[in-house]
Length: 492
Ligand code: NDP
Ligand code: BG6
Image (cartoon, rainbow, N blue to C red; front, side, top):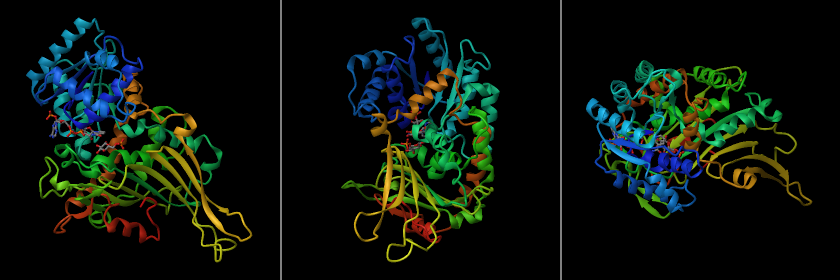
């Protein structure tokens, strides 16, 4: 496996810890080798040491405890190759190194190319894989596959171009457009919740649902990723991919079968039914903001513009909130409120389904009422689980009604937290199963919806961007967005 962008945050914090776990679980062949490729200067040894430190710090590795003998065996399979993404010579050197490793390890020569760089480098890498014969179109023995990180392109046209370039060099079944949210157990469980239970599907529609909220909150800031992030912002980094997948899985019709294509067909229909937010409306209706310095968990954190590789006058959003509508029969009139941001008070991704109010008779009026409508919450992470909030009579002579929760937690029910998404997706790509990866038309449909929003926001003429202090739930404008409809964010 070759990981391009090996000096980056993803490789260090998520990818290599996941591969190490796969190694510990005996999922990797003896002859496996992982080559990190990026422009930064490193040796095999320094790369291994950096990874060892980050794997120790990784949450995925049992609170940092790693078995030294397993690490030593794994580390001997990690290599580093320095090179540029647009240099045919550097790719020729990479190709030679792979050949030598294959001979040395008597390996069959299968190769997975993992693009963990910003999207601006994807096309160069694919072209150079082609020129250096590291891409073998159609050939299945030995196979070569490409895994491409999100965001897949930077707008609709660049996504189309990237799809074209990738298909010139690889067959579609060799291309894996990854979105790690699809590998999360809680995300896969959305379909099970909806379609393996008879009670939910009947009420999963506008007649019974008032509105839906999707929040992906992070307490982390941009850290060392300014070079990538400042060119992306929350709309490209989170909304175009992770949030769109969550919305599709909540809103889609039951697929005809569980095949990858049947599921993706239904998701594309949702994307196509999204009411466009034209650039002019985006400029006013989409709340974008940037974190300023503030306190999280008792620690003062610097603002976004103070981060490494972020211009001090940057207008890139680290927070976005907006209202979406799915214009089909099932969802007519139901607003979907979407929100994501960095440096919010805590890490928490959840989807809440807010059911209709009951009539204002019987209990839903004084003295017992007004009552809170039922809410079904899917906790994607952390504390993964599902909760249903409903009303109950508190014991006693008076008619006191209190909201209670029925709560299912993965840890309590299955004895462990759900496995890491990257482990599952890397294994799937290794066996060639694309079910949990994104199809080309799905990516393009998501861009067709999000790109005009980005365009509108780029015409924002306000003197400065909205700011929110690190450790808050975003600017007050995000609260006003939902309050205008008489609703409140559930997480606040
Ligand atoms: P980083 O900025 O940390 O790392 C990217 C690496 O790519 C850098 O170390 C750099 O290595 C190389 N690079 C190539 N071109 C550029 C450029 N123009 N600007 C900056 N770096 C460049 O980003 P991440 O690792 O966080 O993200 C990489 C990709 O992974 C993105 O597409 C992101 O969406 C995706 N991703 C990230 C996740 C995360 O949690 N970090 C999770 C899921 C996906 P060098 O200079 O040494 O060549
Ligand atoms: C990545 C984004 O795709 O997802 C990051 O590039 C973000 O900015 C990350 O931090 C969040 O992933 P998770 O699994 O921690 O929710």
